[in-house]
Length: 533
Image (cartoon, rainbow, N blue to C red; front, side, top):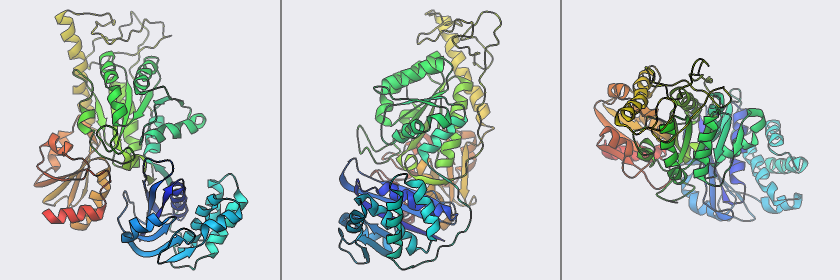
């Protein structure tokens, strides 16, 4: 059983918060939820909407059509009436439409504040689906610390304004619900992160906001410097001092960090970079999504660089793979990258996080002279930090084992080979980890190749059409040892970019591409697949 609700209004109407509260209510009943937020780069005005999808099965994306539209303004009717396969609930003070009207704005002002309008509609939605009022009251009390009496009155008014149309019963216990960005933050903390540094850039900004508001309970320091260059270089300094550090940005900010990526490689400094992709190039459409930074991140920095790039496809993978990226950065003393996009970053998922832990790095034993870049079998030198009774050098120049600058040919060759040796051992480790996921009909002659956020739509369509889905979790090193087993027969790459970047890397000719800033929905993907199958 499943159903979807769309809530629409303008920026400043509180659409996103209303959608999240509705999701929390259904979460209390034990349902899986997914919330998609669509908004323009405006503080006021424009058009915002949230689609809350509820199901008794795990879901990872939204659908085009909805069972209930809640319209806070006329734009919502004009832009989304085509989606309706059920009722329309609207504010009769601002909207003219067929459906069920409530004079929400005038009643909210009468009760003390126009902000109570959303609580009225939350009450109405709850009555529409026959949800016990006490459950809704508990969620509202946790959501609003101020004006609790007024919110309770508004909730009751909305609840009493409608007749029950459906009866949604409790089917289980609530789960945790988190956005992709929150999941990234928590995964990094699970692997020992103690500092997060970022300059706000949509859609990565909420990692910074979440960690800043939870500094004490997560035991993390958050820093917002003046720009992305400062972000990256501060992270190098923090890691040099022994602090597990992550930075976050989008494509434009990551462009400014590229010189520091090379410095991390040369100085063998472990830093985790998060790139939450948005529609580009340049400023592009800043509050919408794309998957067009893949080649950029995989090839970022100048020179030969050993790196790991993970590409989670949902919130649970964001949690696990970010923890893996943090641990691998510190084990191999390399830069690692978490490559996501707006559809994962800012959507809300039901989650059941796997167990993660901090894996210790190779540390200096304190004996003899300390060689920061000591030659070893696997290329990984023991780490020491200022205060460890050692002279600890970090340098962007080519150097000897102590970190002293060199320029002779033989020393330069040996040190470059030392760093590159890590990749051999890294791949051996990855071969013992889950690097590729396979879904659907493994015997199908048609395989959908997906990565990142296109995963959700691909899985649903494959289930309906009897196809196979292959999803690499790591895109550098690209796990060909595993992909080669599954990319058989007819392979169709599904990506949200204009060129087919993963398809290029794997020489896949057939492609279904989307590059309008919006993610695939199952309905759209199914239609486009049926046109070519």
